[in-house]
Amino acid sequence: MTSSDALAGHTFEELSDYLDRDRTPADPSIEGSPECQTALNGMQRLRSVHRDLLLKDAQRESEREDSWVSSILQHISLEARAGRDIPISHSSPTARLSVTEGAVRGILRAAGDSVPNIIVGRCHLDGDVTEPGAPITVRVDATVLEGEIIASLADQLREALYAALRQHTELAVEAIDITIRDLYQPFVPPAKASSDE
Amino acid sequence: MSDAPSPDPVSTDPGTSSTLPDRLDKVVLAVPGVDELYSAAPLVAAVVKTVIATTVEAVTGEQKSNSSVSVDEKKAGLEIAVKIGVNAPYTAIDVSRRVHDAITDQLEQNGNPDVAEIAVSVARID
Image (cartoon, rainbow over all chains, first blue to last red; front, side, top):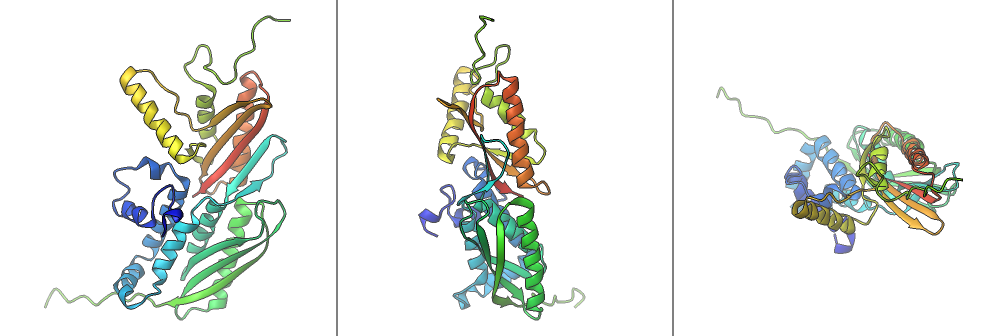
């Protein structure tokens, strides 16, 4: 991550270390930044849901240059940036209501994490989201558990993403394109030696 | 016609120590679904403002306003900016509208000043 990619002046590594320290001592420049909070929440969710997979992936990271976990963590951090303002309508002429693109990508990722056996990677909103009614295509990359029926999981993910967008935005979503980039293997815990032996 | 001056909408309210931005902070935080109020100013400016307010209070005992809602007086009227986090299952659409309406109600109670813009930005949804 370059310094220009940093969130509120913090790199992905700094946010990850902050999470490792259980967010103590509290850093006002992180806690006061909605972008940092969105990134931290995404990282925390990924860690809690896929803790075992993360450990496994970290162990073999040196053998693979394209660690999907690293890639997802980088995307969480990059996509938490505020980005464009997505308008919300109001009858008052003095009202200017909006939700940030970063917040919307955060809810897309959260919705994706609610679908079992699929992990959302990159999320992208294609189209002029700042223009009310403009057609938007959502593009999402994901990783799926090996052995699952990909079409069925993609349908579940698409439905969850549509629901989240309908709930929080007035975007005119034309399509949600999902690309499965990778498969991950189920985590099998190592057999424990019997304490009786 | 009364000769009484109309109340200054931004300055300290007579009888209380709070300014309009301070009061708007409370109004916004009371809206259901708002779980965080962020400084509407850029982050660096917000951190500097907090440090100054804390230092002044420690040295002089005088309480400095450290409000998150931004209120600017412009020729066309007040420009008010708010940045919030929304707590799901509340929706960003409903909460941002309620925040706008709550600010409008508060302004009506505060002399009904001219308003150029009320900007509400949902910066995080959990």
